[in-house]
Image (cartoon, rainbow, N blue to C red; front, side, top):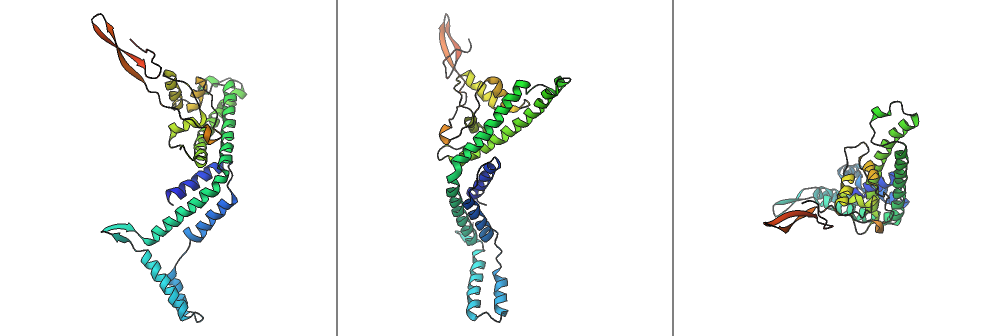
Length: 279
């Protein structure tokens, strides 16, 4: 599979796993391509031999099949250009067809892309709301030893909240795929760019750093989700491409100097706020 075809198929299937719709025409095109072309069983040599010995086949049938068999054999031979291998004619044709099929699939899927993004966003929000409900009952990060003797509903909540956290991780990835399928501008390319899918913080300076620290939290039991909850940030999935906003990394501090009795003294300020942080 080429990257454009394979990546599109994988993304659509991920979105479908979270309740997204796959158009019937999309499925028809994919199945037709894969059964009639990609996984076809061509053995023209065998068919040529059968045509030769078939009493009902004509000289024309044999000649036409021989031409097809010869063309197929030539197309599968590694070619060269200026002494460098550049692949086969058959491979080039396959790649061209595959890319064209991918284009057709994308065009068909575009009709449901926005709706599917809303479906995945809703699924994420439901899980986040459940996470916050359970966090009211029990601290997500409490160690198991401290649950001994606690009521059963508290212990059950403690177990469930870890599972909800895992589902949030999965849905965050699916949300990124749904967003990319619907967006014509911005792209989700890594974990940092996913932050804007569920957060729209306004914090600056050290507070911005706190947001990123929470987003990067991995050592705690429920990862970033308990860290964001403790930070008090609003978590809500984007339901439309226009809702996505990027959030820059913390810039840090810069050095400045001030006059003192016997020269200059260095001190540091927050690069965003200008607030003095030491000295």
